[in-house]
Image (cartoon, rainbow, N blue to C red; front, top):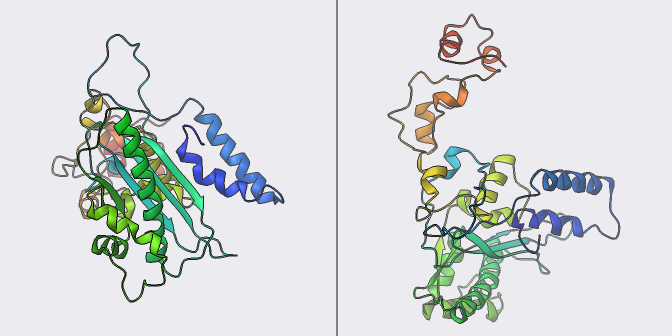
Amino acid sequence: MTTCRPDIAFTSVKLSQANTCPHEHHYHGLKHALKYLFSTQDDGIYFWRTAPRLEFKEGPLSQLNSYKQDLLLDNRSEYEATQLDAYTDWDWATCVKTRQPFGGSCIRLADGTIAYKCKFQPTVAGSSTEAEFKMAYDTGKMILFMRSVLWDLYIPQQAATVLYEDNEACTAMGNAQKPTTRTRHIDIKYFSIGEWIERDLMILDRIDTSINMSDHLTKGLSCTLFHRHADFLLGHVPLAYSPVYKHLVGTYTDDHETLDQRTPLSLTTTITAAAARVCALFKEDYEGNPWLPIIWHGESNPLCTYIMDCGGVLQ
């Protein structure tokens, strides 16, 4: 977890809280984590070049575990290979016993995570804004350190590093560079992030929670959200500058007009998919699905028969 697997950071920290006196459900949680690690033992963080290096042996491409619509969500930012970007999140009052929160942050370069943090915070936050603001401060310190390291490596950061945060009040308070009447109880040191913003070292920007990958480091997630964030944390999804982008992602499209209008109503339809800003299923996504006769109550259904005639074969 501390070297190349940020996708299990929250699991490791959560299980470590029960080292001295574990319960049976901690044992089952550990078995579940080990099964996941065994099935992904060859996984790690991918970093993508802007051009191929012919003198190196070609390695295996990353495997995308998230759905097509997860890769095409709106407002997902892209940066150059040498430009830093950061994400932070805080799950307020996570612990039901102490009401202390979990915080998570990650810093990325060349489409891979180079620094990440998952921490069970020692203090109780009075509000979600206060919790998010404290984590933004911790992530800001990480950004300053990484900028100094890149300077020594002759990769200076010309522009301010964008720090994405999914709490609107937190971003407003940081950009205002001063406390409000409801946040004056927060320690003065946390407001140093306003000074860093004024010096143009970083920018605090609002991002939607659905694409905030640091959310992966703060709580247990559903299967869909887990794989969506893990693919980006581990760098499985190359950016547009990479030569392999077209091979892995470039063939995906969110053009709803070209989709077959006879998509089964029991699945995601074109209309509902457009309303939800996701892709409706392509025909090849449900051809050969053994559940089709069950969904439409047998093969006698005309729609099911049509799909089976198009190439669907019962497994």
